[in-house]
Length: 595
Image 1 (cartoon, rainbow, N blue to C red):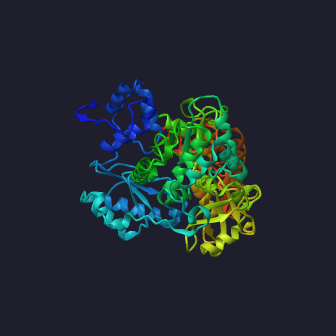
Image 2: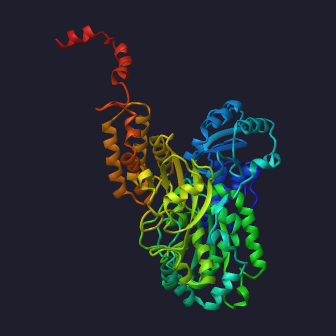
Image 3: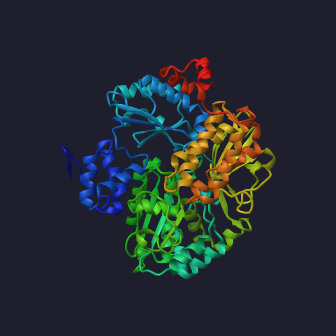
């Protein structure tokens, strides 16, 4: 395929098919640095798609660029925990050193610097991405100065100091999932010995609930998928851990990838699937090659492929698709749309994915932690898992702890553990608030630290962000508001417009132009969005706003300029230019005209 004088080399990893469009766009951009329109036109012709469709898909994902961004693309993580560690000042310093404005490409076309959503490295921030591929952690002023020098010298990133790219696992407290390793094939052998029906019964007996946040019972989901009409079924691993403050899947995929793939294979045996897909978030591009190597080792060991472990007719393999920067793709129907090479717009349900998912086939979607738990259940049995944790929240839960604490990292506890226990273990001091479950979760104040992590009390997808009493909780909520407005897919008006209106009001308060009327409007926007949006993003976008207004109202009132309505701009000043031009700037003239 040619675009002008450029040759786009065919990618053997993905077939030339419309379903592979997102992956083909990603591969093409890795070669060219951006996606010129002639390249998109060539790709559209080859895949039998319209140019409008291809451009529409490319424009949906923030890691795709329809305009040049330079040979060096630097993206600072803009999560609130990175900000608390000084990321804004570091980004401003780098921009000054490189003589580039944030969000723009330098005139010579060599470099651009911008912010991006959470990169999943909150335990070792501030962090940034270089060309969406290289991750740098623990940024400070010295590293920023040296980065500027290396970019100006066009020094390949692969030759930069290796220490900069070090990513620690930071496992602080391990329990079943992080502390009891299984040999490759051990859990699968146990599941195959039981048989599909018995394995499904063990899953139901365990009462394992999905670890992605919604908490649907895994055994029930697998059974519904197995019973759905159709001859081809699919197992999907949701590794698009885009919730700010969450990084547990990153560690599970780097330390326990075999366990994740084993859990997927057990699910395939239970529901009768032949195809498996991992949707890996774009920020975790650095994990792609190691994960592919693990998959190949499993194929070589007959743990994937045809006749797995000698069981005739049990054929199952796994492919990895890399996301391109879209938080909404963490929702399972959006994820499936992206897997099919489309924009990640949430589907209308029903039908649910277990009935009609990937390519219309019955599909079970579970997250990384859920598949790890399933592998342990295959070995130890459902009753063993059900005996851990709380009655309606069985087993253990991994928490990604970050923010104002001495020991950020991963902490695994049985469900039912007190919030205060986690704060004690991570070395938190003088804590005023904890954001549990990320921005879409719940914000707890100090008088609630006796509550427990459980679906019966405080549910969570894993994020646990700590804020001490020096932090402005209004600014925390404002950061989350900007996040949701940026990540809205734009499909439905209540979310697209509502998140933008929330940002406008929050920014007005931050600028000192706010009144109690603005706080009342924020309450109304919360009620509107909670009941009228197309998917969960819009419905939960105001959760941190609602919690912080209710529990930390003084943080808002400190930003109020007036108890009454205060306009965000001076109307008289805006009209002064027009009055001067028309010669009507003399108040006496106004009076005479009125008479």
